Amino acid sequence: MKVSIGIPFYNPGEVFRETITSVLQQSFQDFELILLNDGSSDNSLAIAESFNDARIRIINDGRNLGLPARLNQLIVLSSGEYLARMDADDLICPTRIEQQVKYLDKHQNANLVSTGLCSMTDEGKVIGYRLPPISQATTIDAIEAIFGRSHIAHATIMARKTWYQRNPYNESAKLMEDYQLWIDAALNKDLDVGFLPQPLYYYREQSSVSSAKAITAYKNQYSLVKQQYFQHLALLQKVKFTALMGLKIATVYLLNISANATWLLKLRNKNTQQSNESLVALQHKLDQLRGVN
Image 1 (cartoon, rainbow, N blue to C red):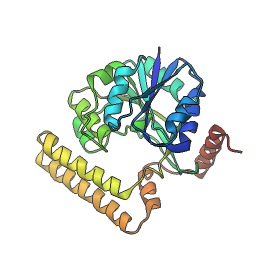
Image 2: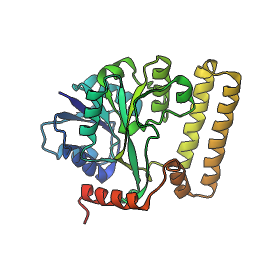
Image 3: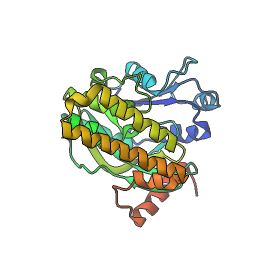
Image 4: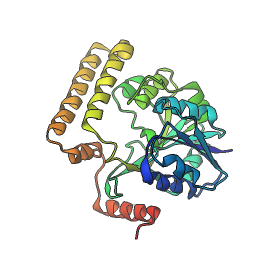
């Protein structure tokens, strides 16, 4: 087995059907799809069971353990040389897995490969897109990871299973499991990352964006770094990090007061120049993927 694709799910709703379909329509076919139920109370388990495809494995233990624990479970359950992940309400381009497999096969120095992503609303309208600013494999150091400059889009990654076995998720790192993973791997000098500059991942971002959730995540990140990683920062870096996190929290707090989620979404896409032609093309591809005329 070349690739295991893992999707933990917790109440994703009817859009889960589109998510699974986008995986089964991949141009690369040597994969298993592990659907791991994290105690859903909606009809998502029934949706998963409605697909008749031998490549699908459904794991349902009736418990709600949280995303980091389920991601670690996927590492253990996976049979593939490579492990790709995605969220249960998102979609992937038909060539995502093929392109990532080719990249890891060709670049043996890379532990994992991330892609660009397209941000969309709950109804499937393209909001914007984000592309990695790096076009070649690079080693991310701990300082870059701590300051949030890894440029890795967590939901888009495909990694070697052996790398995941060396670098499991911290199951207590709720809302920041990827952030802590990058830091820990970087401290182990084990974060060699490749990037594909195409938006191969369609991120249903509107439903996941919450000012309160973002503020909590930033506060958790600051507490984490202060408690566990401050010794790796010089004095000036500590000051800069504290100021940066304070600015992020204040910005999101002001947006929360104004109830302006649109601006929060725009901030997430601000580092990529938003071309109208690209937005139209991405919308067309997304409509095709969703079967929308």
